[in-house]
View 1 (cartoon, rainbow, N blue to C red):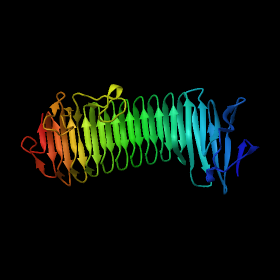
View 2: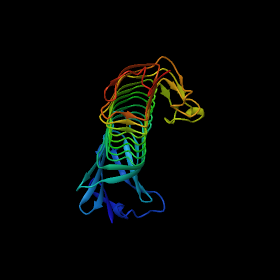
View 3: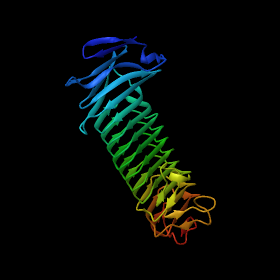
View 4: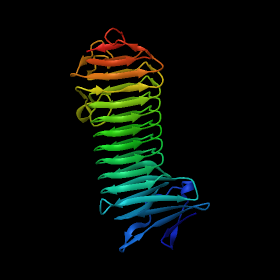
Length: 331
């Protein structure tokens, strides 16, 4: 059984989270945060000597169980509100829906997996999370976020200062700039509606795009991937789409692209309007004066097209002349 405590008071019991026993409807477990003017934590006994302690420094939150999920509903009363979920005794805890009205200064929850959705109506200062199996949606900007593997979607309505993740199998969609990015392998997609600053990632087999500039992108291998600058991919942050998701193209810059391995069977473009068969078509056109300044790949480049209106230095791995190399298309 899962015992629930508010302060030092036993509130009751419901089926254990570790057994994922379903409840037919939402069951309120308790309240935490500022209760009756006092900072009040809420402790959930997970069994086997493990507990999860929830604290909130400003505002109030409720904890409930819906089916086999534990959900949080939080109203932050000021931008200084800090949320903490501490798991004692080892292991992790999965949260279903976490709904936050307002902004949070910080989230400290390294042992928490987001299984469904974390939604914040304001901004997020700093956050440390476990894996993101579901979605994280922040209406405004994010100062810094550190998390594990991303299988769902991470979206922000403003600029993200620093983003550190494990493997990106899902989607990152930022409607502002991404100043600093560090991830594991990227099989999903990363999109910034502004510029992508300094980015260091693992192997890339998905999409990396910015509406204006990619300042610095360092990778291991790039295989069957697409790298774009000057591509505004609409609200969905994906290539293609109609209405609010429709794509538009303009001038773009890739200042530095470096692969420790090879760049194979991929497309790298700055300021490209895709042709009838998508990017890399013979009828691709220029979207404006654009440049790829530096490209290097220690393992060479096979089956890859590079397109822009101008190129700087290219070493694949030896230095080559982009104006005479068939892999480079000057638009």
